[in-house]
Image (tube, rainbow, N blue to C red; front, side, top):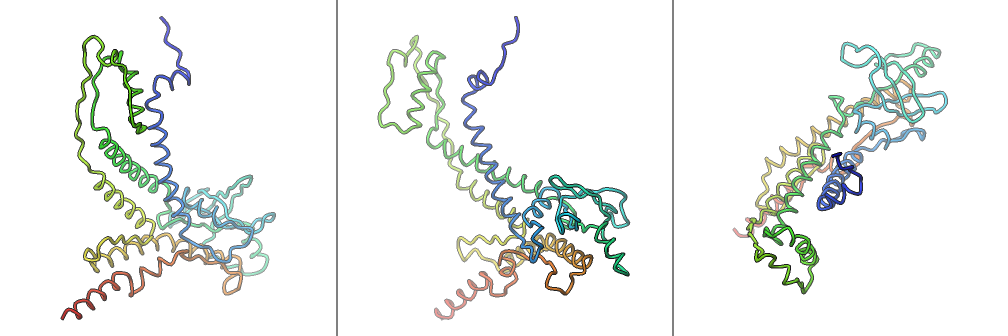
Length: 331
């Protein structure tokens, strides 16, 4: 006897009860991934970039590939592209040649390391044959992999909380005859839909004198703890990205030393991304003789959070002063 042919229709028919959860799981994971990706791509502002360059595509290249390149093309002018190693490695572990590529574009360029042109002819040669290597961070790693892990952890926590909340509504297992299954599934659909009244066929509710049995699961409510755990994951992800994430529920929980320590960690993470971008800007300005001109490019943190975490009058200090003033009044 041959095997039953499995089609898309029969696969859905046989596994219909798993389709909706699978779609929900995928949507939840993709949602967290998109949220974190948008934050990662929006942290830095590229200042004075030529109009032929695209800062958003640049950040995407760094996010997904860990590297990008700046170069000058005879047809496009100044552009930023994706890049990969092409050639030997120098004494610092950097590629001596870069494969620069984008949509409908590819070229191979030498890595610029700070050489100074001695004359105009050499300057034109440098501009034609060299490219700037832009690194995402000091380890030349993309951000995408870590963000995917954070998104998965957030998805797992959300799924557990969702399941636990749902268990509070239906904390029972139903044992029935197979002949009763379809009818009970229809009844349960009405129950899940919050019908005010549900009618059942008495002749099918007791087939072959086998009454329906309900086994209580008595699932404890832990969703609140899971949500606190999810906040910790979210804060950890923001710290990794260099974004301030002090979550204050009660002012008595604030500990100045702990907050300052967290700020330093946030700063170090942010600087690991910012420093490599700033170096690329310096090399770009040097290679194309833009240093100390109004056409020089630069990069900075887009959000004011970078200034807040370095400000002595932080939210921690404010609460500390409020508490001290309250003590003085009581005395």
